[in-house]
Amino acid sequence: MVSPIVNVTRYTALAAGIFYGFYHRRTLQAAHDAHKLEQAAHHREHLIAEAKEAWKRKQEQASGKDDVITDPEDPRFDLEKLIAKWEKAA
Image (cartoon, one colour):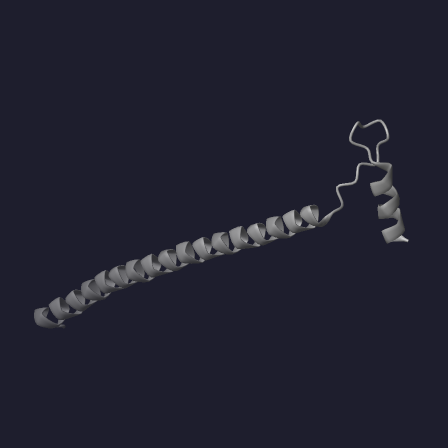
């Protein structure tokens, strides 16, 4: 037969272990959730930076183009600029 003091000690240790496990799991989960939020924010910042770089490259390429109008029906059409562009390409 087990004495009542041993039973109280066993169940107290069991209850303390359960509560500690619950508390420890909550702290680990909170740290994990915070880490995932931080990772998501960094990923978003990285995507935004990539998009800005792509936009900047696109704008540089667009500004680097010759603004030669090749449509002869356009009132801003300039045959000399078109011929010069063709000479550069050849």
